[in-house]
Image (cartoon, rainbow, N blue to C red; front, top):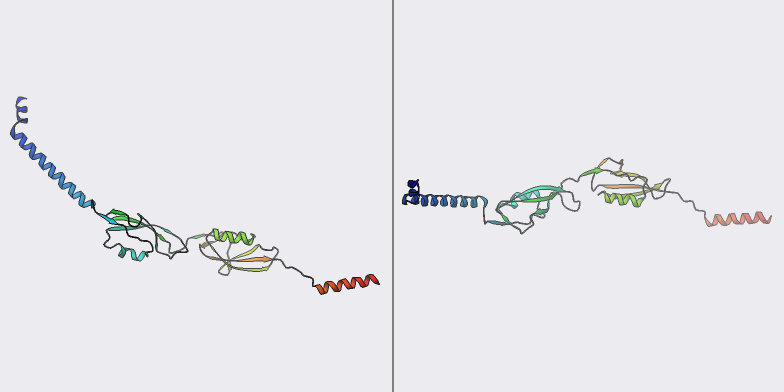
Length: 204
């Protein structure tokens, strides 16, 4: 045991201990440097503004900017051109690490389909309100003689009747055929003639 303790305080042990410590520090320093290179520690990229860019332009747009992109969702917006970026995460001008993936939301190239609502037998105002709430567009309104006044008799898409529940694309135009009751008028001349005839009959 005395020999062991004597070895621990000997110059040979201390020399090897110092050499081992230096080697460990050098190895750790090299590992941290390699990790920094791998993760691009301290290097940042400024996120550009993708808004309004076409999908076909994205690969060329990100060249040399040290970032990537990923389209994660497509949204239908009839007021925007199809196939363009409308939203991104992170926001433009944000500072991010090199090769950070930017998540993009684009407009759908095709409008989604939905089930046609039932407009027949509803009032004109109700039908128009439903058309707008379902993401459809109001088309031509035609009045024809019918049993009801101001109610929807037919719902048409591209000139043909479309039944409730049939698939239809959002943004489609729906034409309405509205009922209108006939009103009969009695002319004043005919009314005065009938009055005179009644008066003559009474005098006789």
